[in-house]
Image 1: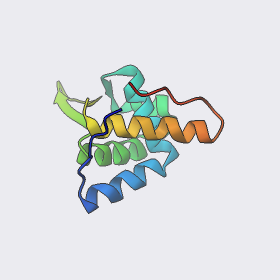
Image 2 (image 1 turned 45 degrees about the vertical axis):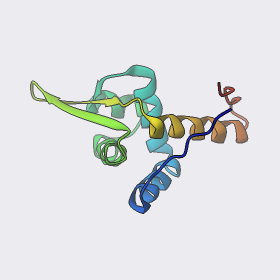
Image 3 (image 1 turned 90 degrees about the vertical axis):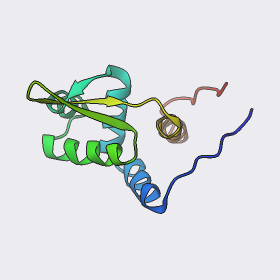
Image 4 (image 1 turned 120 degrees about the horizontal axis):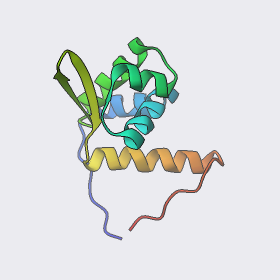
Length: 109
């Protein structure tokens, strides 16, 4: 398996650490991964948090380049970007779940 080097700044590392240590942020990431494009109300409802907390975590994920926000017809919509950092976050969450005995991590290709 060939490993790619992930280049992130110290600021991005702090944001990534905050995300991985927040149950709400992890739920928001999963919701976007499973559902695609959602507005803030849908994200907060599915992640079981309030709009303010959801927006805070979505903005942090956007600063990391993991989430893309669009404003169209008076609504903010959020989508998960397909990039190395989002794949890294997805894999880190899977490993964390496996360590907690919730599920098994998927084998890497």
